[in-house]
Length: 138
Image (tube, rainbow, N blue to C red; front, side, top):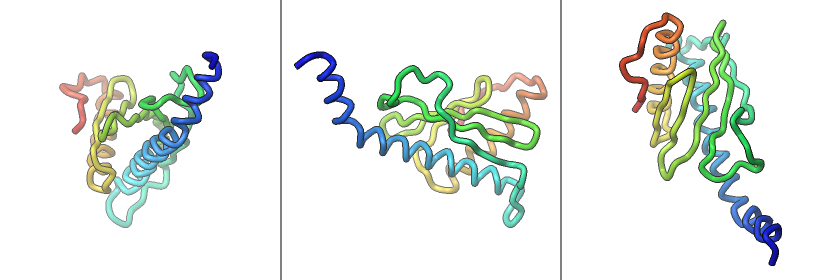
């Protein structure tokens, strides 16, 4: 078997895992979108929040290998922020803005809402020019 054939076999073998990983990462990104839309309070959706799932700008291989980032641009009124997320074992690792990071183990509404509120606070601090003490979100 040639190296080329071996690569094709590997891609076919891991296709379902890659698809599942992508679905889970996009589920987190969609949950974050809904959490940001309801950041104005219950029954008061923010109409100026939108999300576009995009290829990760740092992607170097297609299809995306297991454990790589999936990305979306979030428009928050006048601000746009790229959020990248990847699955690492049982935990999601994410990045946003210039130096924001987060980790999420559950995709429940409360866990994602905590990340959404922290994301808004940290982006606000970035624009105000404040040095965040710690951008690690838990």
